[in-house]
Image (cartoon, rainbow, N blue to C red):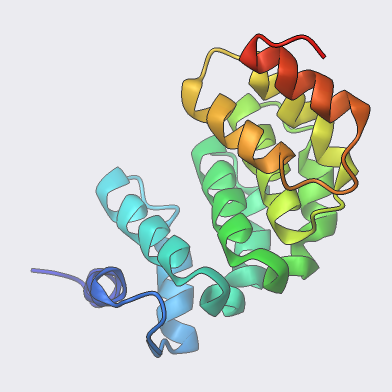
Length: 171
């Protein structure tokens, strides 16, 4: 048996990104609440659904901001990733994201830095964390960091040098 939230998640993930999926405030609230579920299957489906919605999930922004108070680093990292997918519509989250650049967990810091660039391409505060991710051991983070750094404006010598170093090129 699927919960109402799981059914909502299933509908969202089967809906084309350019369609007009209609979610109520309760649907959004339930999906965000399920991000904290200890069952990673449930939290994963909710995360996927909100990520798929992108800017259409902007109503989730205040709920996602609250999740940065959660003790679970998975919950905080997931909230940051979703805010990044919401993009410019998640601008109200920038102050809490900037504060979270100093989170103790490196995965949270990385997702926060990537989200900041997705929300505002002039987010220079995210650059040190993204450059650090280029040198890290997580291949997914290295690829995503390179993509995010490619969107940072204005482009700086530090960014170009970091990207060149990551590819093994001299600059």
